[in-house]
Length: 530
Image (tube, rainbow, N blue to C red; front, side, top):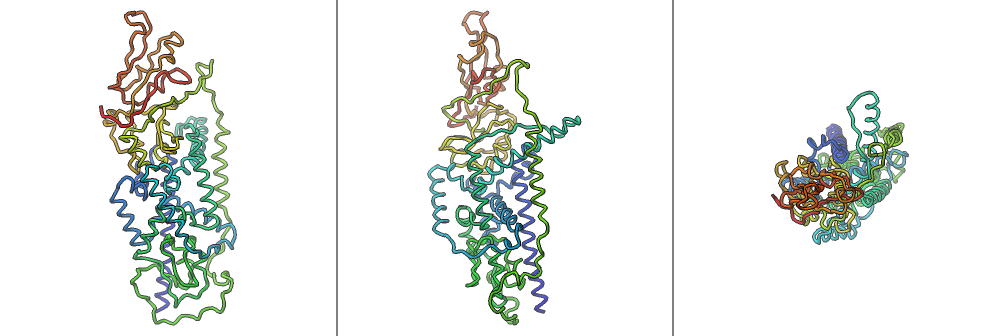
């Protein structure tokens, strides 16, 4: 009877870990694709994965999602950290790769006391910065936002180069299944922050597993406080335990103290690795009130001494050849070769003169997308996750380099303009800085107004007629008048009717003047509805 119960419990524990790994892999891949997919296809089906991230849900005042995550933590522990959080899953992947490099690395973890002063000190500073309005600085350690910057700044260029390589091959065989896209550095500060964040987290995860989650992550600290009171927990049965230490050496959170047979539940991320490591079934995931199923069943005497853990790991298969790394390196090499395969074409005007690139004008007030309502609403809610930057089809959004709004998206029209029929940024924003708007609503929201710099206009500088801005204005806010009042033979120059302008930037982008456009859009601190 005891053997049947032991076998059943053991099977359940192993299945829990497998289910957790499968769910984590699915969520991680889909969230990553949210930042890589520039077509918007993934967002239509799985955009809700961004909305169930903890910090965005709190900032968006999404009480239903926040309550669901709190209840999940009180019920099952920090399942959010091991399944839903992409940064946490990324650390597990890095740690798993390290564990595959050498046999001894499978047992490299050990108990370490909690650094509560550090972790809760960081949490207090994080909350104070958000309350004081320094959301852009606090977002540096926000887990979902940190992963978004890593995916958008480091992985997206590789993904786009790979797409461009496929588009190059497809073009050669007369297919249009793929189309090339521009790969450009949207913000050097964000790239540096993303690279440094990845390096730091990579080193910590490679050496010690979940160190970042249990020291620096503010979401991990909040959920750690709640997980102390969770109903389901991994519990050590001291009567079955043989003191082999395998569970503690497999614990990536370093939260199992085998000398005292205690688990620090505030740091346990519910990964279930310890359940899989224990061949005796001495650790089980169960409600805290559940009685032991084999309370009076005698167990084998503890092994004399504490020999090398490798003497007690029978049943664990030896790791096979590591073909995963080779495949990853090969695929990365193919993606990187796209830049070399596709020749960079010189942009010229009629094949005669090189077209100078546009420079961004100095705007007194930055431009924010329709649905932001105001600069204050945007800056206090935006976590700088870069999801809206990733999905913008017209390359209008890019991260800010200003210290007060560092990494938070702002608009500029050197590479495109904000089309009235596009609402992708408001559709994907998970934390509330860009509220959802319809196409009809967007066409009537004034985010700024056009300003004309007449000395830059080609009518005055080159003495030629143009009218490009007026022809392409979707709201009819620009009209052409004679440069010399009363002289109908004089050239026509543009004027702006501010009450009709919505700030879409079509005029600024399509203006032929270089390097600065003769017309640019100045932002509004508070958006208006026309």
